[in-house]
Length: 367
Image (cartoon, rainbow, N blue to C red):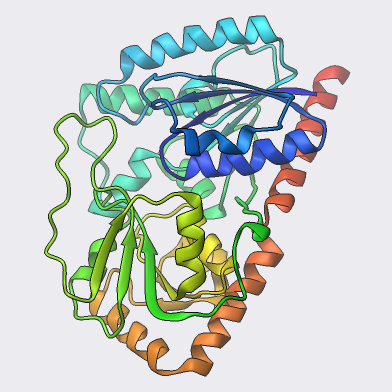
């Protein structure tokens, strides 16, 4: 089987792509991977070494959620059509909505990782104002979802959001994102430190909650300070408390070490269709303190400790509680680890996608 997949090099979708493509290739599936959003750094493509049946085609086309991306989206659609004609894949797996209408003669999956409208509602409490660009964005999302044979979401919450803010897909299913637990250290000595991973410019990640109160333990925040594709972006200049350390972007190896040494992970997002960072923290046996949102409750159940939604004082209170109670902290650390091993491994994710691919291509051949 030969799959053409799109991805972007910004944020968690690239990590998801790494796990999925690596697993598919190891299972004998050829992959042509086309990335958008900017050329990746060398560290971002190191995982491709030795994957001989992977054909990687990086591009710099702007992503659909970026302002002033209309021309780039149109040009990238033409580029993809040409690649599809040249490589002749059996199935199309799009990680962006705007390509869902391409090549209707082939089975097409669109994965709804997130979207701007549901992000805006989560952050601002209302739908975004009408504008020419927003109408364009809504149209390409709706048409892409409507044209796909299957729409995949990483959580039921995200699949429901599509129904609420866009359209009902022909067929929708949930496949949880996953990581390889072997990439993380679950048995190293822990330090009295809280870790959080989130882009400082993204109000949906809401790492600012950690800056609003005095914290009982050192807190390290990992993430970029400026928004990609925004020429007017300025680095965040939040006032940082003595116990807070902003460490910026980190490599996967650096993150592994940070997860391994941290005892608590703070999942502060108010918008999180599926966060890979909490999964990575769980595989590192960190206790999870999460914002009390529907998506976190769906994914983590009783294996996380929840602070009142978007409440920085309650977050600080729970950090104090876990910091002072080693047995309770260990209980939640073990619970998060077990939950991740059961539900959020890369092998589980890859097997589910492979099964879906086989079902779709078999149906296409039968038709």
